[in-house]
Amino acid sequence: MIATERGTPASVLRDAFLLDPRVTYLNHGAYGATPRPVFEAFQARQLELEREPVDFLSRKATERLAHSRAVLAAYAGCERDDLVYVSNGTTGLNIIARSLWTGPGDEVLTSDHEHGGIDRLWRYMQQKLGFTLVKRRIPVPVTTHEDFVEHFWAGVTPRTRVILLSHLTSPTSLVFPVAEICARARRAGIVTVIDGSHVPGQLPLSIRDMDPDFYVGILHKWVCAPKGCAFLYARRSVQHLLDPLVVSWGWEPKNPGPSKFVDYHEWQGSRDISAFLVVPEALEFQAEHDWDAVRERCKQLAADAQRRVCALFGTQPWHPELPEWHGQIVCAPLPPGTDDKRLLLALRHEYDIDVSVDRFDDRPRVRISIQGYNDAADVDRLLFALRRLVL
Image (cartoon, rainbow, N blue to C red):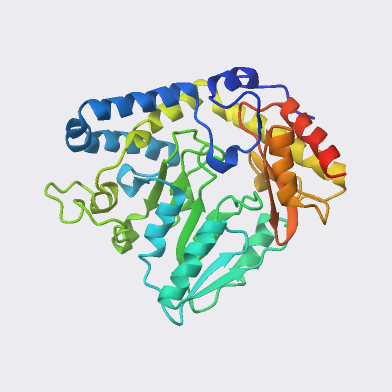
C-alpha cells in the first residue's frame, strides 16, 4: 500500500511544473523537468545576459559561478573547488575518458548495465588508446549489495587500471553499492569513475563519504535545474590528470583562481551559463517543498508501480523488494515477444503516456519514473493502457 501523502501534495507540484497537462508524464528520468519558479529565474538570468553580455560573462561570471558551486558542493558533500559545472553527464565523462592515459595491456572494468552513450564513449576510447574494456556481466535479478560487490570485484585483474560504474543504472534502474567498490579500489590503487547521472535529487548523496576519484552528476534531471546542467567532481589528488576538453582562457589564465582544476574546465569560451547559476534556486525550490518527504513518497509509489506491472504480466522484478536497490525510477520486465518499439509509440500517441519502453539484455521492459508531480492515478492510467496494448 502507498503511504499517506507527505510533503507538498502531487496536485500542488503538478501546477508548479510546465509539463503538458494532457500527457501522463512518467519519464522524468529521460531529461528531467523544471518547475516554473526555477525556469523563471533561469530566464531572468538569460535576459540579464542579453542586456549586458560583457558584464555578465566577463566581470560577474567567476564570482557567481563560485557561489553556485559552493551551494552545490554543500548539497553534494564535497568542497567547492573540487567540482565544476558541465553541460551534461556525457561532457563530464568525456573529460575523464579522454584524459586517463590507459593503453595496451591495461584494462577498464565496467558493467553491462551502463548508459548506451557512455558505453559508446569508452568503446571509442578503447579503439583510440588500445586498452581493453571489460564488461562484467551482472545477472538479473540481483540479490544483495554484498553479493554484487563480490561478483563485480571478481572481474578485477592485475591489469585493471580504471573502474567505471554507474551509481544508479540507466537501462535497469538499479542502485549499485559504489561506496564499497570505491573503498576496495582505493586500497588496490585503481582509479574509480562513478556515473551518478540519476542520483542528485533522487538519492542522498555524500561524495565525501563515497570517496571516488571522479564523479559525474546531472542536475537537470532530479534536481530539476534547467536543461544543460551537470557537474564533474574530481578528488584533489587526481585533478591534475584531467586535460581541458576545450582549451580556452582557463589554460595559462591572465588571472589565475585558487584552483587550476576550475580554471581549466570552467571557462570554455562564449556559452550561456544561466542554468548553472540557478542551481541554488532549484535546490531551494525542493527544500521549500519538503523534498525528502516528497522523494520518499515517490519511491514508495515507484515500488508499487513496479509490483503492479510485474503482477499484471507474471514477470519478476530485477531486484528484491529491498529499498537499497531502487529510488524513484524502476524497471518492470514485460512479457517476452513484446514489440517494445510499437508499444512505446502506442503509449505516447494513443494514450498520451510518456514512459520509457526499451530492451535490456534483449528483454523488453518499461522504466517508470515517479517525480513529485506524479500520483497513483498516473500509474493507474499506465496499467490501463498496458492491459490493452500488451495482453
